[in-house]
Amino acid sequence: MAERARTYHHGDLRASLVEEAAAMISEGGAASVTMRAIGSRLGVSRGAPYRHFPDKTALLVAVAVAGFKRLNRRLGSGDAGAPSSSVERLRRMGEQYVRFALKHPAHYRLMYGKEALARQDQPELRNAAGALLENLVDVIRVHQQRGEIEGGDPRAQAYVAWSAVHGLASLLIEQQIDPNVDVDDLIRQTTQTILDGMRDRSQD
Amino acid sequence: MAERARTYHHGDLRASLVEEAAAMISEGGAASVTMRAIGSRLGVSRGAPYRHFPDKTALLVAVAVAGFKRLNRRLGSGDAGAPSSSVERLRRMGEQYVRFALKHPAHYRLMYGKEALARQDQPELRNAAGALLENLVDVIRVHQQRGEIEGGDPRAQAYVAWSAVHGLASLLIEQQIDPNVDVDDLIRQTTQTILDGMRDRSQD
DNA sequence: CGGGGCATGTTGACCTCGTCAACATACAGC
DNA sequence: GCTGTATGTTGACGAGGTCAACATGCCCCG
Image 1 (cartoon, rainbow over the protein chains, first blue to last red):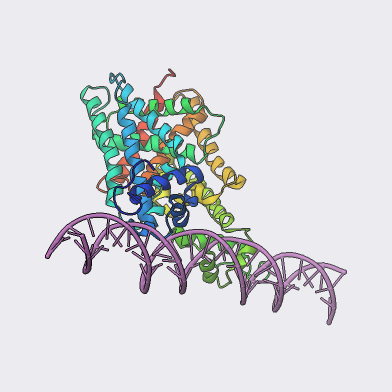
Image 2 (image 1 turned 120 degrees about the horizontal axis):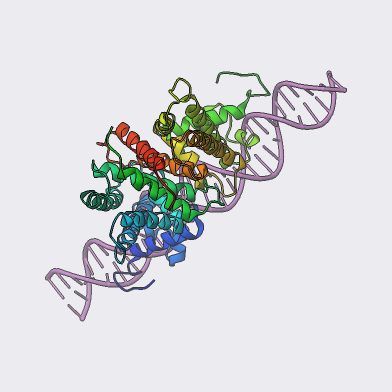
């Protein structure tokens, strides 16, 4: 809605579609996202989106990719201003991760709901998620070198940490966790447990 | 397909529907499950299922519940024959959990895909998932009492452990993890990290 | 400066699907 | 055997994804 007159008729419909779809997902869940509805909200017909995306799946993939990029940015920004001393940085990343998921549950769900997205492999999506992992691996490597966490394959450790936060986010979003539990405490305890587990382990 | 002549025309259509739906999910993913298709495979019309379930969601909930029960049984059975000494039992539960998910990816996805299932709270589903948590809490409590893992709210620890295995299962299913990584190693490392983290922590 | 062509948008149509209502049927118990 | 209800069937409707034919506007080439 911000910029216009960039291209032909509508003015960057493609970007608007992604933006609007994301908004609709947040407002009414993935089920509310309809080619017809999204077109209508943007003042175009139901067929217009097909000039920019081959099908609905492609649009949703773009939305998911945007979500990953946003999440990545969030995790990166937590970096600045934070005391990168000790493993505090890692803990902070974990917290930001879960908080992002809680703030945009439907969007987060879409990002990881491969079923809804693609039968075939979507390289763009893979890359966006991959970037997330790379960042995590980098941070872990740094802390390994400082001796703050145990050595070993940083990628494997990244997977373990990612599993923990993603699992927690997922369970929270799907309301599998007793609402009486203090979410902040749970997030803290999860990240703490993982960090402790990574700190003093020796490979079997 | 096994038993018949239990009730009226078809002979326990309800159970057959759940069974067949589960089979279809495994074969062709959730998208392939159609009221028409499932009826057709069972030799009944598209309307027949509506005599047993108010809508498609209800059917899927039943399938998900069956999945939770199956998973629960699997986790429990790992108990028998296992050296319940030390935390080996917990580690084994974690492994079994992830293995179940990998064996029935689409079914597992459905179990946790609340969006696809219900707008309103489904008590049956909640209970089935809750039973899983209860079991985990019980086991953790036992090991706490033996001093094998740290004290503290066993429920919170259960959530942490559940998050880790669910997250790992989820990432594996959605193919977010490099296929070159040894899955068995990753499972082991994940459970091990969690257990280590739970062993020697003290509340902040 | 004018026209052609492509990028973009629109509309009509078709198919699949979930679901409801009206109708049909079979089994249970009297 | 008969009636009522549980069960199954069929026709219809509306929503939604998608394609093809058609319309439109913008850019660039001459």
